[in-house]
Image 1: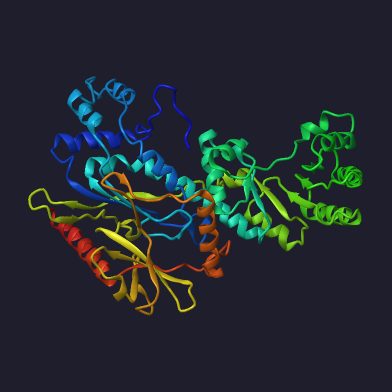
Image 2 (image 1 turned 90 degrees about the horizontal axis):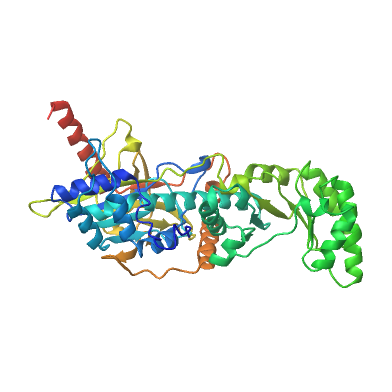
Amino acid sequence: MLLSLSRQDSSFTLATDLYELTMALGYWKNGMAEREAVFHMFFRENPFAGGFVVMAGLETLIAHLREFRFSKGDLEYLATLNDTAGNRLFGEDFLRYLEAMELSCDLHAVPEGTVVFPNEPLVRVQGPILQAQLLESLLLNILNFQSLIATKAARVCLAAQGDPVIDFGLRRAQGLDGALSASRASYVGGCVGTSNVLAGKLLGIPVYGTHAHSWVMAFESEQEAFAAYARAMPDNCMFLVDTYGTLSGLRNAVAVAKQLLKQGHRITGVRLDSGDLAYFSKQARRMLDDAGLHDALVMGSNELDEYVIRSLKTQGACINAWGVGTKLVTANDDPALSGVYKLTALRGAEDGAWEYKLKLSEQKFKINIPGILQSYRYYDSGGRPNADAVLEISEDPERVDSIIDPNDNTHRKKFRAGGKFEPLLHPVFCKGKLVYETPPLEEVRKRSLAQLDGLDDSHKRIENPHIYPVGLTPNLNQIRDEMITRERERLNSGD
């Protein structure tokens, strides 16, 4: 997915924050590098004040983890770094350790296209603490961004109510690698295609495009421009009609479309990119229908998002295809999914027993869930998702019949035990070896659409959605509360 750094060195292992490497050095110097640890990735709040997130980016992460190694160029660069006293930060012995290191972690993850919610693990990494620590920045970068954009795309597509939505965001995306990731994630979230031809080539996403205002401006008249375009591509005509005036542009487009009809060709439609889209779309539909062009599309573009599309739908706009760019690929109203990656368990140095780890905070929502975790989705009698439960891995999911809100012990949900349920975390890497069959991108998109279709409409509202229940089992909640109490007592005692 990411662009090559150079012809000689295409490693992305250094796509990490420096403190991951300084911690790695610290683990190594203290004899802890090989101690087995467990980390979980999760997020605390849905973006866009929404009701869900669409998991995306796993295939990209897998591709990078399969090549996870420190190249010669990586090590040469690390050897140039100095500490604040001017001494080499990373010595030769440590660099030789990194050079010989091969990924040996287990990784479990939620499949791409799955609808997920706050406080449940999306990824579990288990293995040597040094390695697991080094995966943090890369993992968060990929999954946070692609899940954010896939979620934004899903919201836009829900607002479009089944009309095709196309990603038009290449020119406004955060760099070429950001554009590729955004095009991929937009497709996962429900867009039918992209204007980004490189994404089409590399990822197999359908590509769409017409012409710009510059095409019209390059000719003596608008009608001549449309006619010239029709001569060049008579079966690929989506005319952009607002270069000089939308109504005159529509008249010129219809005139050329009639000539095409006589030659046995039909225009794809017209695109509106400015002005009152509700009004002009109604005029466009009337003019096209009067000319017998009932199957011609009216496409809307120009700074669209789910809120504008919803408003246009409410106004009865006759738009039946949408080109969404800047506000989709930049997720401009909530430009980051705040996924985090926390240490939750560590093997004891002496006896090898698991020690659960807790990050304490004055704010309970920032206290992580300790342990080695799995999450399960439970369904109601109608087959719809009813609740997600986070379990300590030794617990039996068949016996779970209630969950407790991790942020409020008084908020509990009971459901029917023995009903249908499924695990959310699936094995991806085992001891560093890929054991997961990555589905084609089209299958990921289908999964996303099916998951959203199965989710109750109340959770998909653009504003003020009903909160989907995610909670801890009573056993895991008790473990967490006892650890919180113990840690606070320790702090109060001054130990």
